Length: 308
Image 1 (tube, one colour):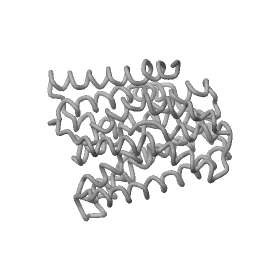
Image 2 (cartoon, one colour):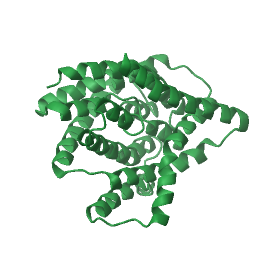
Image 3 (cartoon, helix red, strand yellow):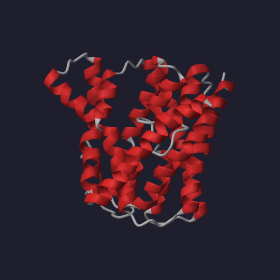
């Protein structure tokens, strides 16, 4: 009951309040969703990724094993989604929208505090989650952009130009390089980075609220629920199978399984809004998966005690 209450009070209710404020602000002022989306892609998201990677302490051994897990897990979920997409007969923009709603998950503002709750501030498990967060920040800004643009245009050059305009793909290697070489960041530069990164969660959630407030509610219940089940139930089950396959044990196995149990990432909404690719579906999935995660994540945490 303690874990259930903590997730409700510290994850679900604060997220819901911020989303509700976004809805209210849109109703009152008709905020421009595309401006908010660009702020997230080009300013807030790169700042928070840089700050977390620059301040982290990652060993090569943990980095290698976590990366191996992530690659295998991502490939498994991608293949699973291709099968589901074909069985359901999705067409056009729904193909990347459904796929992205399952393979992109909230590894930052949901998974990081959750990791700290479950493992009581363990630096080792935190480093694992930061690696997952890094990959989950990089892929939406590369493959994610490619997938939503591929359905609208055959111009590969244009799509690649869009991808290479994303700051995150440059921020990650720069942060690693500066941390590895112990390059200090001057205070007048680091202070704005802190300010901007601290605003990321609020701005991303307000953006989701504005999107929910602006859309014409077309209930897509079966598709939304299917995505929720795949993300919240099948996702951690696949993660558990992969840690067994790779022979990962103990705390590391638990941290990796927990990282797979979180709801759909805000990145899927930001991509959908920025490139006008099924924003209604994506918004409904993010909102509903966040709510349902209170039950599914609590169950996963309970079952983690059987991972040895």
